[in-house]
Image 1 (cartoon, one colour):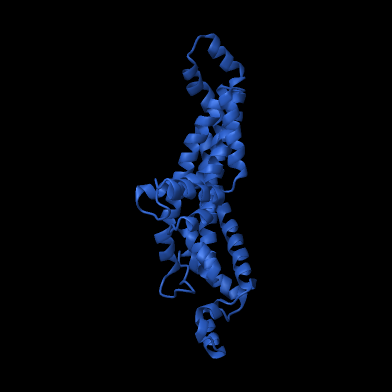
Image 2 (tube, helix red, strand yellow):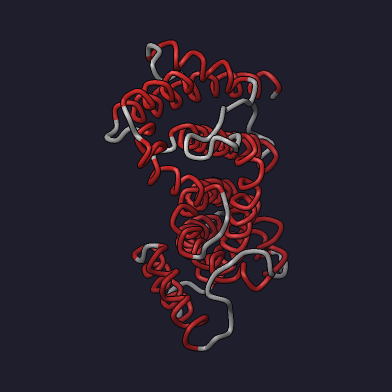
Length: 306
């Protein structure tokens, strides 16, 4: 296990380097000049040349990338091009916990609802409840998160005035963004849970347990869910990646001061230092979540060894 863990962690290094290189090149060759944006009405050729030298943008690309990687390895991501008084590491430290909390709440809600609905649909297959759940899954997979968010705001905030339109901090502020972000993962987890549980319910050892007169709840908890867990856990891990990326839209709609919203603002303002850091951080988070999912297989199924 430790050897496998070290191998996976070592694989993260070229992955992060490749991601950093792609984002660095995309930022360099993308339309627009951050120096021109930063100087705005004070732009002159001499002032631009001076600022470009201060930011290190007049050096060769290889030197700029090597300097960025060397500083990033020490968790020093430089300063924001648009707000030079703010260090990017401080921005990450202040906003990333908000985005992670939003994503974790959405995935937790999606896991609870998705597993419950999937098990219900599998146990009561071809019933009215199963058909209604399948219809809900189809709707959840078809409607994008920003449409769900708009609908939730229209109904719960503007028409019925039950929840705030936007904001972050009060417990009531969490409800709508978490629901908007969890809609699609609920559909994915429900579909996988239904298929996985349904397959295990047809196994011989389940029929043997039934023939022994064991209660249905005990069979489900002790024999079915444990053996059906691997694909469900995999889907929950993928749902976290969806929630992290889906937050780019949800945080803007609900005015949440998380890192995804900061990244969107940075893209609009061509704040390349913040964009590069946001992409690196999100890539590292998604990689760590996938690693945690892989390691959980061994805990769920003792026959799996690394």
